[in-house]
Image 1 (spheres, helix red, strand yellow):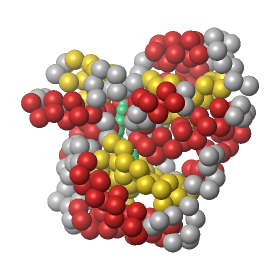
Image 2 (spheres, protein in one colour):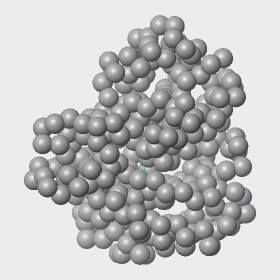
Image 3 (cartoon, rainbow, N blue to C red):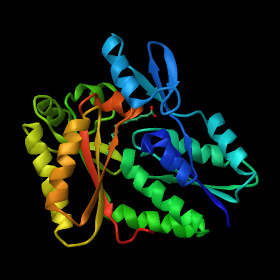
Image 4 (spheres, rainbow, N blue to C red):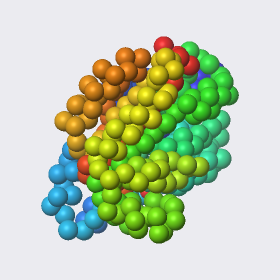
Length: 285
Ligand code: MYR
């Protein structure tokens, strides 16, 4: 059984890594001054954060069209028997639903759409695991079961400098009164049932980072091996510093750094930062 692994651009898996693991990517779009750009294809994260400084109009985003997904799956049908198409949470984007619709329109290949219920490198953890398993010719159903097991230990917490981006894009859920009271602080955010919810009200960025570290510590102190990734929106120096700090504290956590690209950056704003982790000992090496 030959299975292709597809994901969308919001996993922000660098091109070289995608190529190494034969991962196929479908981009989401950012609309800047009336022009639509495919992120990770026409527009990279650093260009985006430079560009928005010059723009008065705030960017917006859009999911890939069903037609683009159909075209990709049809192309893959020439070489593969099945596709696992892993996407950002269905609670924040219609991309996963688009993959289901497109999958039903294609002949000669079985399409399994998978809702990561998250995004960015947390989604990337699933994608890389699925790609390693697909390379071993493991059956799609077994790959999907493995992703479901990963989901049990996967955590992601993040904070933003300015909550208004999330509010404006309609991607922040929770009681309005609570959200209003969050505008002055640096709330810790997370995903609950596929949508973004405030996790805790925290006053400063430093305290929020400490709290995330504490949450990681609760898991890491079990002694289990974890992989974790710091994700930042144009805050590389801070990310590097934080990485070193965590590495010293938790040697059983394998650390990496990734980024919030144009689409997710549109909704979180520059300066956002987060940490995601998942148990490693289930992972295919
Ligand atoms: C679309 O237009 O379909 C894309 C909408 C993307 C919404 C993004 C909301 C922020 C997600 C934060 C993810 C943090 C993961 C650690």
